[in-house]
Length: 515
Image 1: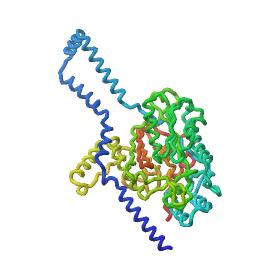
Image 2 (image 1 turned 90 degrees about the vertical axis):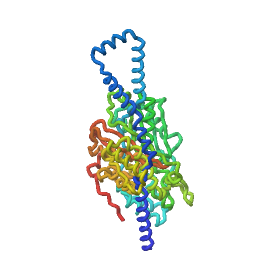
Image 3 (image 1 turned 135 degrees about the horizontal axis):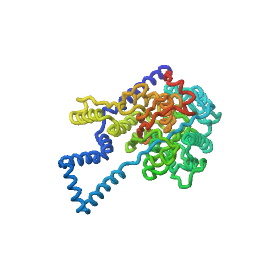
Image 4 (image 1 turned 45 degrees about the vertical axis):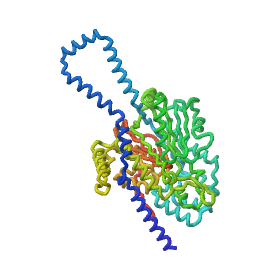
C-alpha cells in the first residue's frame, strides 16, 4: 500500500511539473492579441495627433499681430465663413466629448464575514466528510491531502448543511445561505455609503451554481424595497470570473444611464453543490471552495456628485475580458455533470492549469499595451516581432515587468498552485501575492468575491495610496480570464468594521503545506 501511495505521489509531482511547463505562457504569445490591446489604446490617438498638428500649422504661417487683426477684419465681411468655421469647431469638440466613455467610479464595497459557528478548520472539514458515511477511506485520505496542501487555514467558513449529521441540501437551505450572505453584504454597503436602496437604479447579481426562480436579484429588490423601475440582472453559470464580468456590465449600463447608481453583488452557494460522491476530480471543489460574498457600489461623475455623501475610492481604468470557450479543452476543463453513480458535481479537469495559463496569456497580452510603460511595450513588442521573424528558439522571450504599471495585485484565490504559477510567470514578489495568499488562508476560495476580500486586505493594511493602481485578475469556467484595473483617487485608510478588522494584525502568516 505504501509503495502504491509513493508511486501515486511521484505521478502527482510529475503532473505538477508538466503543468508548470504548460503554463509558461510567455513562450508562445500570439501577435493578434497584442493588436487588440494597441487597437483599444489608440482609439483616441487621432485627437492627440490632430490638435498639435493644428497648432503647428497655425504657427508655421508666420502670422503676426497685425496679420491676425487684418484677418479678423476680413472675417467681418465673410460672416458665413466665420459661422461655418465656428460650427465645425463646435462639432469637432462635441464629437470628441461624446466619443469618450463616461468615467466609472467605485464608491465602496463590503465583504461578508460569516458567524463564528460556521468556521471550519481542516480537522472539522474532514470530520464532517467522514460523518456522512458517503465517502470511501481513499476519498477521505485524498481530501485530507488536498486541504493540507491547498493553502487554506483553520478559520474558513462553510454553510450549516455541511455540518449536519445527514447533510441534505434543499432549495430552502440554499436560499437561506445566499440570502444571509447577500443581505448582510448589501446592508453593510448601504451603511458605509449612507445611500438609500431606492437610489440604486442598476442591480447586478452573479452566482454561478445557484440560479433559482425568482432570481437572487429579485430577492434583493424585495428585501430592501428597491424602486420599481430598477434594471436588475442575474448572471449564472459564469464561474469565479463573473464578478469582473458584472463590473464590466455595470460600466456599460452606466454609459447609457449616467445619472443613476449601480450595485454589484457577487457570491456563490455551497449548499446544493456539495459533492457526496467519490470522483476525485469532483471532490476538489469541496476542499477549496468556501462561503463568502461581496457587494459594491459604482457611479459616474454625474451620479456621484448628485449626492453629497458619495466620495469615490477608485476609478475603473480598464476591463479586459477573454473567453476561450471555442476550444473544447477550455470549455470542458470546469464542467458540471453526474458521476458514474448519478451524483452531480463540478469536475475540475487535469488540464485546468494549462487552460488557465493560456487564458491568462491572452488576457494580459491584450491588457499590456493599455497599462505598461512605453519602455516595456517597446522591448516586449520588438522581441515578439523578432521571435516571429527569426524563430522562437533563437531569441529569448522578453518578460514585461508589470510591477512598473501596477502597485497592487488581486489575483483570484483559486488555490495555491494557481497563485504559485502566476507569481512565477509574472515575476512577482511574495508581498505582491500577499493579499491573495492571505485571503485564501483566511476565507478560502470564495469564488467571484475573492477579489474584493483581497482588496479589502490591502486596504486594511493601509497600503493603498492615491494614484496607486490595482489589478484584479479572475478565472472562471468557460474558460475565461478577466481583468479589471482601478486607480485609487485618494489615500484609503482602514476604518470601521469589516471582514478583516478583527484579524488583520495577525497577518501575514506563513503558509505551510503539510505533507
